[in-house]
Image (cartoon, rainbow, N blue to C red):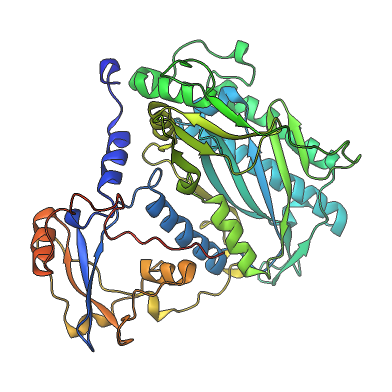
Length: 474
């Protein structure tokens, strides 16, 4: 890569900070029990948002709790998946403006479809009386770690309508709508493809590769090495070894049995010009536990570490979550092929991975009328860490800091993994922040006070210090 200009700084930083994540010598905090004096060191995390499973998992759990408790109302929600043609995947991987416009095109057509159906079902005088809402998450890779920019959308499966359309101060009432038919979904896919085609034409692109502008894209001009990674990762081909330029080896256990034929009306599934829509999953908004599970799914990390293992010959085995139609259950990757796909999974700066639309967006005047009431949780608050290269001793008055906007990491560990770091394992007392080390020198001093060396012993297992290995509770 260095021979071709190198990778951009945001990609290099992602990998370098990931290597320091969870290492006590790179930064840690000391928890102490007031009652018995028991202490425990906990390593700081890198807080990145792509290849680090620990930190992306934290974001996933945090945002899922936020969506379930403070954004999505107790009404039916439909999970839509919108995937794009192969020719767009590498392009949208870097161009955040174009990616935003393509996503907005699908949301606009989905909202139009809901409003037109609501007008017909409810007898409204105008589609403007119907208000829709949605939350969209951008996923960059598929289960094979190929660059595959696609959208997961949680859309309110109905519309809000004023009790008295002429009175803007009247209450909003939610009206659920029937499951869209295959013809309605096909129309949605067709209109989405047409709208996306118009957007691409403004950018000199097209859904048809032969009609696209042959001039190099922004990423090809600014970062040719990154553009090469995007291209290879989107195609899913190897870059090293005997299979360079070809798809990686697959482990096949026989073709998956498919149903003989689909019913005439297959429901919300459609395809138009490479735009694939799938919207069969519907969640009852009153089932908050299931809703949070779906929120975690659409925000999941790029790779599940439990599905990645090293073989005896040094190659890597990536097991698929679900077998493909031809029976493929796992891929055999060379180490460099895995790194290339991980490079493509890193989003550029200011590339927002979650978006809000309609009545759920922050600029909607009706948002306060539909979102759940905020619940106060005193257990989520904690004093901020120390500033600079120092070890700060938090005083008795630091136990009631100002209200925080999101859940604390210890709250999420207790909520997801049933692990309580706020309670002393010896006496059941309260574990408080005692000292914080944010630099290597401060961490070394703190580790020395705890009788620990600056590095783990040579025969220690290859597990980052301070990381917790806990079973995931659904």
